[in-house]
Length: 283
Ligand SMILES: NC(=O)c1ccc[n+]([C@@H]2O[C@H](COP(=O)([O-])OP(=O)(O)OC[C@H]3O[C@@H](n4cnc5c(N)ncnc54)[C@H](O)[C@@H]3O)[C@@H](O)[C@H]2O)c1
Image 1 (spheres, rainbow, N blue to C red):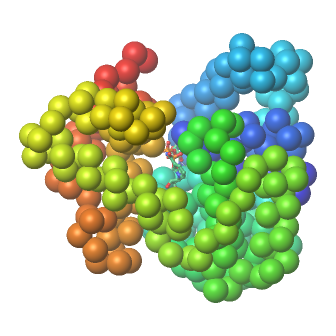
Image 2 (image 1 turned 90 degrees about the vertical axis):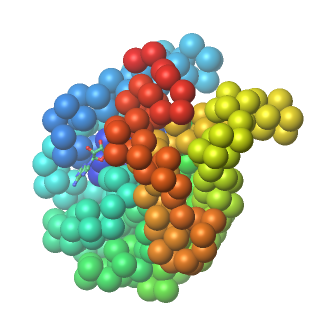
C-alpha cells in the first residue's frame, strides 16, 4: 500500500493525506471543488508547519511530506492507487455514487476504504464488484494528532483485507487500531454522539450557557475541550448527519439530532470550518 488516494480534501481528507505522506506513501487527494482543492493544500501545509513548530517534525521532513501529496479534481487520477480512503461528506447517496465510480476506475485488487462515521459499510460494499475489499478505516480529528483508527468489517469484508488495512494503520502510520462491527456509529461515536447531543439539548433548553456547559466538562471532568467546542471542531453538519444515521439505525431518541443543531446547520453555522458554531473563531 504505497500509493494512496484520498477522496475529499476537507477536514478529514486533508489530515489523512498528511498522515499517509508523513509515513512515506505517495498520496493523491481528489477534491471535487476547485476552491476546496486549493484550501486542502493550504490546510496540509499549515498543519505540517504547526508540527515543525511543535518539534514533532523537522522542516526537511515537512517539505518531503508535502512533496509527496498531489491534489487533483478528477477521479481518474485515483486509478493507480493500491488503497483508496474515501472522506467525502456523510451523505449516503454521495458515498454510494462515489463507490460505484471508484470501482470502475480502480485496479481489481485495490482496497476501497471509507472514513465514514456512521454509514453501514455493507451498503458501500454492495454497490461494488469487490465487496470483500471494502472496509471501514475511521480516523479521528485531527488525524495527524489523534492516534486512534477504528477498523470496521462489513459482513462481506475478507480477513485478508482486514489484516492489510490493520497492518497499514499500525505499522505504516503508527496508529492504534480498535475493531468494530458494522453498526452505525461504531464504538467511539456510539458513545460520543449522545453526549454531544445532550450538551446541545441542555443549551437549547436554556439550562446553562455554552461557555458554562463546556467549562463544566473541562474544569470538572478534565476533558481537553468541552462538548460544544468539540462539536464545532467536528462540524455541525457532520455531527447532525452522524446522529441522523444512528437514529435511523437504532430508532433511539437519544440519537435524534435536536432542532437547534438542525437549524444551525440550515443557517450555515457549521463550527470552525465556517468560523462560527456554538462559539466564534478567527478565520
Ligand atoms: N469531521 C470529523 O471530525 C470527522 C471525524 C471522523 C470521520 N469523519 C467522517 O469523514 C468524512 C468527511 O468528513 P469531513 O468532516 O472531512 O467533511 P468536510 O465537509 O470537511 O469535507 C468533505 C470534502 O469532500 C468534498 N467532496 C464532496 N463531494 C465530493 C466528491 N464526489 N469527490 C471528491 N470530493 C468531494 C467536499 O468539497 C469537501 O471538501 C465523513 O464521512 C465524516 O463522517 C469526520
